[in-house]
Length: 112
Image 1 (cartoon, one colour):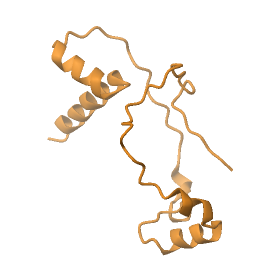
Image 2 (cartoon, helix red, strand yellow):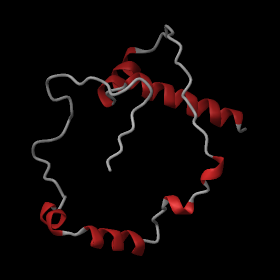
Image 3 (cartoon, rainbow, N blue to C red):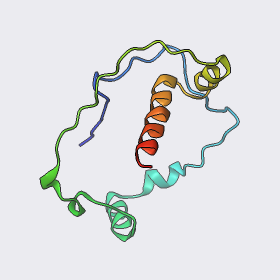
């Protein structure tokens, strides 16, 4: 069974043209031949043998609850052009990244 998670509001629409930054000269390090021939049993055994594997059996599910993200508030913010351009260049969802940086700063300041 396949599960797909999306942020509230559903999947975002993509541009018609390719929007990624993958280098054409970058060769994939994925061994596709191995992936074609490995069996489900071998994958299951590899998961069991991996000491870093955390399965749902290891989790206490009795205290789980659904947490919805807070609705964002639109604001107007004056920002230096080079800072804004840097975020726009490095992040597709630059506003989300700026929000994450500000939130991390807030949380770090509260813990002092």
